[in-house]
Image (tube, rainbow, N blue to C red; front, side, top):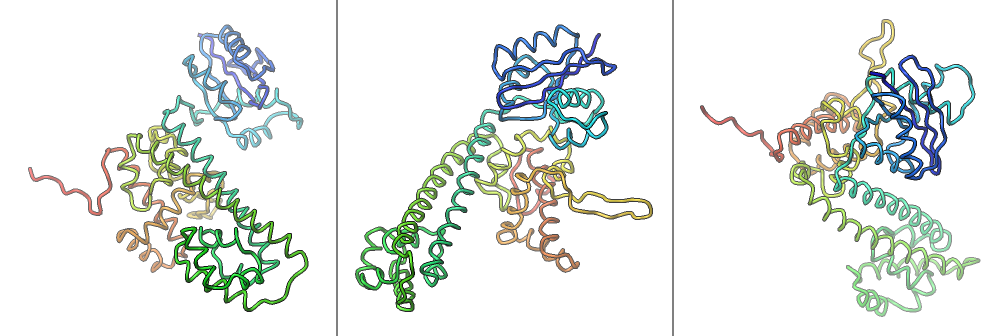
Length: 396
């Protein structure tokens, strides 16, 4: 039986494929358009070269999604190599030049000699939807953060006292800034009318917000250059933040509705600190199939909460923070551990014990996150929800 390894250097509009045999001899090298007919033709030509083909690719989604779907639909084994792994592996091959053909050949050769590469599988439809929705939410939250920072910069340049006392992540202060952006405008409307204006727009604690705004207005009587134009920009930015808040809220509802359809919803959300959004992020980052990782140790390593050894010579037991891990999954494990300290007595006791041992705050939280990975792994394996105390064994 002739074995073939095919490497695909994926791109947005084109891919380059190189197929090699057991000795590493190049059998095929072709640039193809990221289009179904050409990809199907490439698949047929590679399959004609041997009896068994193993594919390697450097992307797991995005521009490679169509190629991966076609290969998986035809029951082809597909291995994933990260761009960093390919870059490091290229140092062991002859020549310093970099081309798509060379990268594809390296991918094919790495798929031939390595036994630890991650196989790609057809994803759960719910998990795929959650990955899309949570990815969109991350974009919106990032846009909101940038817009809030711009709003603070503009307001701080014209009305620093108001910028200092307002929480611009809340709806009430943002509503205020859509109507009044300067000290003079706030003084003209006065406390009574400002309170009524805020109440008509259903602002919570309108009295306190109006009082705070008027107090800051009374402390600034200087009109700064460009104040009118800045006021217009503050109005527009405040409105933009409110629109982004509304989009995030609507997206959260979609995420929750889709997440509830997953078989692991009850198990994941039963863990203290893992709510709707972080639970959905966990599924999006891992694919929901724990069999891919094999053990809780590998899941913890993938999530960046397990230390990596850095031993050399006589130095042993030297543990450092890992460099290669899923940042997205770490953004699930670390914040959920932080939340659990406030809501779960067991987590609080574990954290306090680590602090008493001399660990810094970050180290104690990472240790807690590592322990929680074991708990979550066991719950998903056994298909049961979290309980503060482990279930007692039934008497024989």
